[in-house]
Image 1: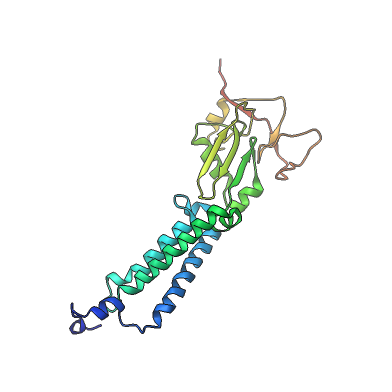
Image 2 (image 1 turned 45 degrees about the horizontal axis):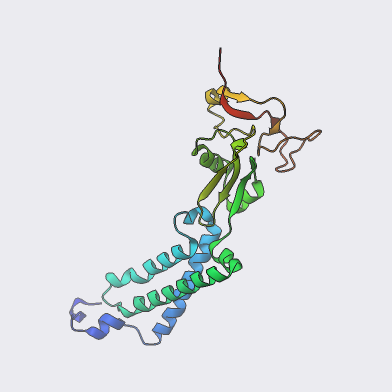
Length: 233
């Protein structure tokens, strides 16, 4: 747009821009489609992408930014199109929040489900795969609470928002250490429990005559640790 075509008293241009009236109907469709595209993308990128804000709100924020960004810098863009887009986003968000309150299944589809990553000191590999969370990410969350092994963890949940919730076990048992393998000095200080073995991959307790772990099909078994520091003479 040429500078001589810009006039402050041109209210029609400021409000509507240089688009035909039928574009505003198209704009409503565009806002809905963009919102849906962002929501679906967030779902398949994994929960950690939306760890601070839930999926629907993140989609609303992204759609708002996309609809209002150009109007600030482009003189041929009117103010009314982003206002309409914002109105559509508010209505969608209102509907999603209201439907989530009454419909648990709808909430699971829009916001995602909670995943159990650790149950009774054992890594849940199927849930970890669905949530796209690695073993080291789980261990990092456990270490962040000051715990040295999985036997002290009753449950570790990955919430629908992408955050983690850890519930300690009131009666902790020996378990798989969450200390990195390269920290051999620290691992050597932990006291080992030699009355039974656990899977070296997920922490599941070995039963008699088991060669493959029934949880993760791993074949390496090891003695668990108690978490206490071994006193050296």
